[in-house]
Amino acid sequence: MRSTTKTLAIGLLTVMSLGLAALPGAETQLSAPDGKPADMTKPVQVFILMGQGQQV
Image 1 (cartoon, rainbow, N blue to C red):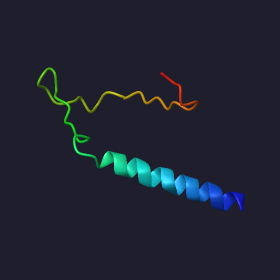
Image 2 (cartoon, one colour; image 1 turned 135 degrees about the horizontal axis):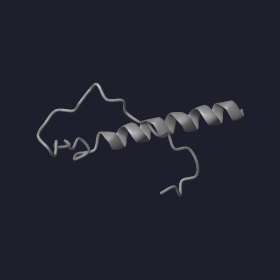
Image 3 (tube, helix red, strand yellow; image 1 turned 60 degrees about the horizontal axis):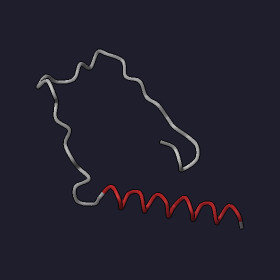
Image 4 (cartoon, rainbow, N blue to C red; image 1 turned 90 degrees about the horizontal axis):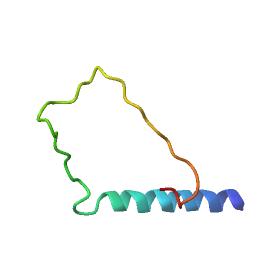
């Protein structure tokens, strides 16, 4: 029973987050401040934050 509840909760959160992404104005385009395209040869740092909802 618990796995069904977890699956349902994950499914609902996924649907809700996809719905928020489809809101008008969500597709804002970032401008290049210097007018040059990004340097694709440089490495990128990615931070994955996991924790409570009160993260800042």
